[in-house]
Image 1 (cartoon, rainbow, N blue to C red):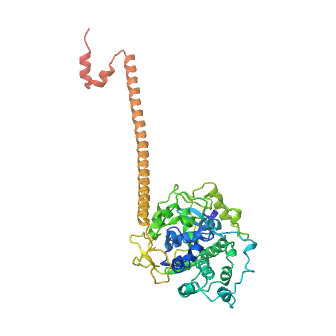
Image 2: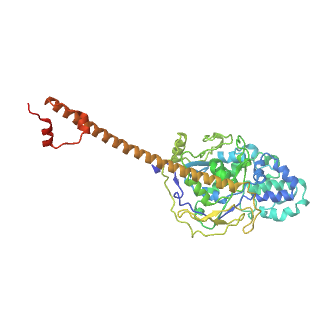
Image 3: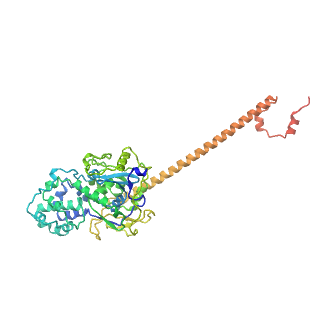
Length: 486
């Protein structure tokens, strides 16, 4: 029944397609920091708290706004505030703080050492900035105004600046033109407490809130903004749906265990809406989707006490979903209900491919129900500016190979099924024909046997072979030839 599980946000095949996502998480910041402050960059990069965040830039993993939007459009509507459910290829999967921790490795538990009341005041640049009535500095101004003159600062403040850019520009990312919250400026004044602060707890809350609040924006055709560490969401999708991971990138270590997943991917992440639609359309019961992910590599961990929220809302439909997943149900026979209408703002616009820009491309040959733009990699630069072309790392070749193999496998499976069906029908018909033939032969044998018995009882001996082999003779002629006078 459709009522026992959460319903889809949009009907299958009618997910909207947006032209652009304004991604607040700008990995290009690290490139600018590395160029302006190479020594400080290396020091912060080696800090175990944020080293896996730096790995995203070091490994050159691209960002796919198309994938982000496609998954957000495949949400299941629940009462939950701290976990988000999705469906892909008819199979449900969860994004919660457990999955966020598995991807980022960021601390997700708070303790008394993380209070903001007693931060150190060194009397320097940051202290003066902090003592003003409110925050007066943004990510954009730090990058555009302060980085060019950063050599005039002392070493400690330069390191603090790098931490601040990582925290406010990536992990807790919001609009680059908005003022950085005062508490982040306070934090970088005491780096010991920066390393014990539950960044995962706070960062997941920002990202999950943004994903949930963008439900209405998903129907827009032009653009919307997504806050938070959205790279973590993308990598979770790549881990939870391995074939999507193959489309977007490549694992550095195949058997990667007990470490944050974001440091194990590289690739250009260039995919279109049609690529994702094609992949989903070939999904079957044997295709792998991991409903849950943990940092230890155990994909069946559910509701670990470490990641439970005290203020989480209960939802009976989600409980039913988890029970079915635990029982091994593949949801192959389930028809997901829908809560949203299928209308979207405006009409899909055809755009020219512009690799590395914020806009999408029109992929020729779209299906009628899912036509529209192909999302190019989202956007580490200001709107209207192009960024350096990402290295391909063989991504395009792997993507085409994967989609071809899946299409071929699906075709073979369909052909095999048709052949099996034909053979089954043929065998059924043949058996029926065989039964009829056997029945008729049996009747002929009985008739012949009855005739022999009749003739024998009448004193006439007749050869069965003669009856079968000799040509028939008219009755009057036959009587003349066999009757003799005595």
